[in-house]
Image 1 (cartoon, rainbow, N blue to C red):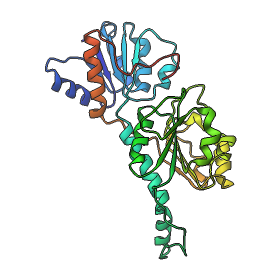
Image 2 (image 1 turned 60 degrees about the horizontal axis):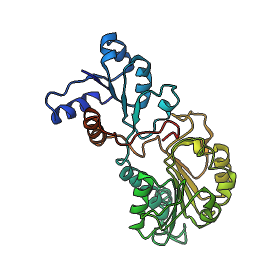
Image 3 (image 1 turned 180 degrees about the vertical axis):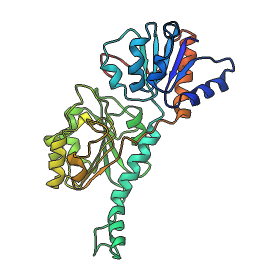
Image 4 (image 1 turned 45 degrees about the horizontal axis):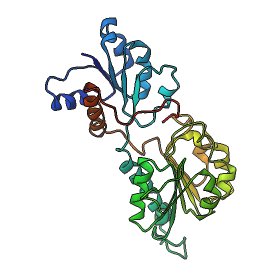
Length: 317
């Protein structure tokens, strides 16, 4: 056995593999402690690893002959922080776009249709309309700004255009993107931000993307706009966002990712007005989805072919 499945869903991945190949064989464990119980000989045999990044980090120094690590997540910051670079790291792409799109759509529709205000009115037995509340809106004719138009951003853009939404995309190097109406770079933000009704960050955590959601950024947004972060928490200057919401510089914000997770009970976000918090659940990893990516790369690895979704250690994605 030259592989190790290290995951809370290890048994599921093992069963899925055996359904594809009856003689499939690999070590499997659901915790780092179980890896410690493997013999030195067994650990030395491991050439590939399928794992969640946090668990992979626990095993990385114990696998001297590792050649390929398939992350079960898109985000691999924990592994990039480790100095080891003598293996191929691949992540998950192409499966999270529908899930992220569902998440964003849920929140923008709730905002347009005033669902939270309706709920409060219901609690008070109040008939909600334009007299007692505010006008209910529609997505048609609105503008969405997507920061980062990779597979997730492109999927989101494509879905939103079905609702009549105009999409502005921001990428590192300007190029034509079919899913967007207009494409620019970070240098175009002063022009793009005042146009956007919704701003969604999907960018990975790199030195270039840290702290970009700051006071200057937020002051350029419409007072009626919503900010949604499904990228990484390091993109947001937290105090600046809190100040913008308290001062009503923007209408609202939705956060699914944070600088520190889980969010501590004493964090200011819990009491910040017009801020909706979710617990990094915008795009859950379903084993059946993850397995398709792993199995394709597993076959490529055995055939000594180029793997898909290789992470560039120097770029961080």
